[in-house]
Image 1 (cartoon, rainbow, N blue to C red):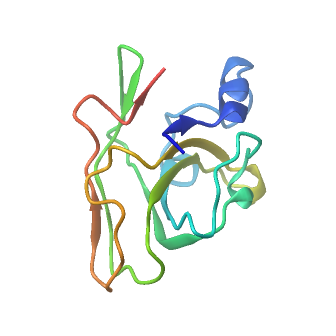
Image 2: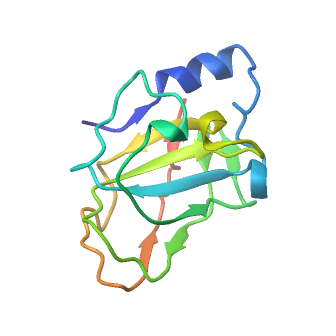
Image 3: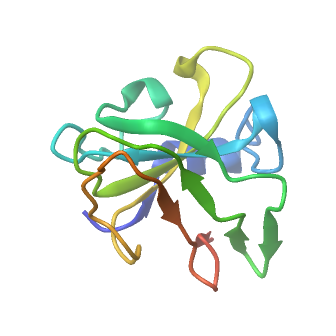
Length: 138
């Protein structure tokens, strides 16, 4: 699978649906999850975080330093601390809200062009540095 924006998120964005924007922080922020593709397979039908499996480590918020330049979305680099578990081959970005994970919208699936992936966790940190041109562009 190549990098992809989840179609259900694009639909929500076009319809200005709740929790489709990317400007929140904290409980309404944009987060990234490490994913084991031996357990999770991307599907264009997936819409919410509850569709994911194979999450490795603790999800990290991209942070308040997000930017939106010429249609490109970018954010702070992230570090997952003390990660152990299955091999990580992909990242999934999602929009969290104060509700259950059945309402957290999936945004992007990224499995190519990420330095350091795949990685087998060894209890140490895993750092993700986004591309200089941004995380993704519309």
